[in-house]
Length: 319
Image (cartoon, rainbow, N blue to C red):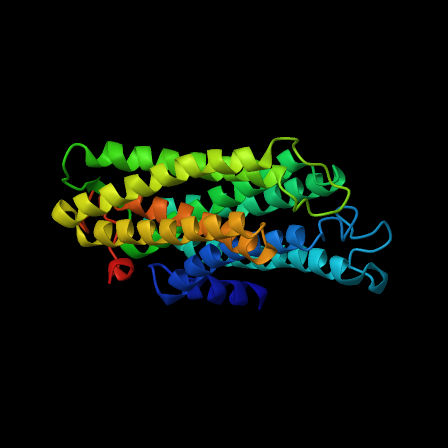
C-alpha cells in the first residue's frame, strides 16, 4: 500500500513545466522578498532581540511568551515565515525533480534556494547571539538579495526555458548592462553600510558601525544616480534595437530606480521614518530582481530542438 501511494505521488509530479511549477516559482520570489520586509519590520520596531536567544525564543521556550509583548510577537512571526519558505522550497524541488535531466538548471536553482534558507536561519541566529552586530545584519541582507536574484532566475527559466544564444545587440549594450548591474550592487552594499550607521538598530542597546550616517547617505546617492543613468541608457538602446522582453525589463528597472530614489530622498529629508525605511529595504530587493531580469534578457530562450532538447514554454514573462 505504501509503495502504491509513493508510485501515485511520483506519477503526479510534473514532467514538464505546468501551472504548479509556475506558481511555486512565483511563490519563491514573492516569499524571498516578503521576508526582507518582515525582517525589516523586526529591526524598525526595535524587536531585534524580541526573542533574546536562538534557536529557542527564550531559554525555556521555542515560541514567544505573553511576557515578551509585541517585540516577541514580531520577532517570532518573522522566524515563523522561515517555515513558509521551507515548504515552498520543498515543493519547488519536488515539482522539478522529474525534469532533472531535461531541465537541470531548474533543479540546481531549487537546491540553491533551498540551501539558502537554513543558511539564512543560521546567520539570523548569529545576529541575535551577537546582539545585532550591524555587519552581520548587513550580511544577512546581502544573502537575502542573492536569494531574490536566484528566485528571479528561477521564474524566468520556468517561463522561457534554458538560456540560449546571446541576443544580437550593439556591442556596447552588454558591457553597459554589466556595468549597471555592478553599480546596482554597489548601491545596495553602500545602503547596507548607511543602515548600519543609522538610528534603527533593532534594539535600544544594539551597536552601530560608528560611521557618519549623514556623510554615507551622500555617498550612497552617488552609485544610485549612476545606476539610474545606466538604466536610462539601457532603455534608450533597448527601445531601438532590443527584443520585447529586454525593452520591458529595462523600463521596469528604471521605474523601480525612480521610485527607490524618491523614497530615499523622502526618508532622508523626513528624518528616516520607519515606514519609508522599510519600503526602501524591500525596494532594494525589487531593484536586484529587475536588474537580474535585464541581464537574463540579453539571451534568447534555447530553441526547442537545441542541444538538450529542452521544451520551451509560453513566454508569459514577456506577455
